[in-house]
Image (tube, rainbow, N blue to C red; front, top):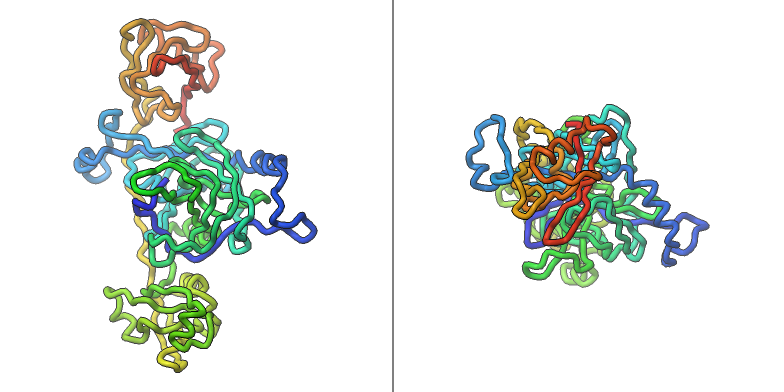
Length: 451
């Protein structure tokens, strides 16, 4: 999960949360707990955990082309985030920062099965990525709701894997909409007090109908503090839906843009500049690198009132209209400038397309545990291969394995034999009793992966 001290962009356009249908209780009434439980039971099967193997900075400098990488616990780290299935064929939504700079990405579904994932596409300005897994069977999915219908005070539910605690559920309300957190020129985040932490990144934010109305993407924390203080931000579903439809169709967004930064026209600003009202988008600046493309047609202080004959209500509305316009088209903008209305013509430019990270050919290597004899009995975990099936279990270097299922283990060979998936009575997981920080702890370790 990104904090505001780190970059997490969104080329935004939209808002958030759930609106009660006619005949339901008033929107301000707190939904009964059983309603939240029913929503969670319905949507949880489509929420996944995303694991990215990222080489340490010094090791990344050694990468050449797409040569195979021998990742290990010494030269790499595993970053976990969240995601959700948006198409039964295996398309998965997540944040770009979860998989950025990864050399290998895996997804663990709600039923605990681990799959190797491909990165289908990413966006350049938004913190959005699309993954694909091949489960061999249709997967449960969730649907996007209308984030524009969400109101401050509406109930929302977040599901994800904070700090590796997969399928964690929190609930809260929409604290604010259309938030500009100075991360990109077109910020339009949903603010929520539903508790989210590192690992919730890429996870869904639901309304009380079980529809996705946002993707949890940014934490706010004062200074270097990176925990939850009840202020989190989600990319609205209207933006997500637009982006993912295009990424699924062709792997790119092909979105239109104008190189402008705009802001809302407030009542006082309208009085100050003599604008006809509070509708429109007030131009703050024109991108210096692309100013020539605009041929001086748009200037700071202009109020854009309409786009190709359609009224512009606010900056978000303008961004929506532009992003869906054909790249290269000639757009007619009605602007208010120096007390006059005039129409200018500008070209629709293309948003830079994001380039998916190169995933190197890291082979799945079985269990992936490096074991040695423990100093006082048991078996010491000397290393965890990030590409082994045990990597997503939470088992750590320094843990001491005491038992596998009902069998005590005292040597590495004995432990590895006990962890073989072909052992009689063995399932997809083995219950492993560890000693960690002088305390016992049972952990389910997957014995195989569908990678």
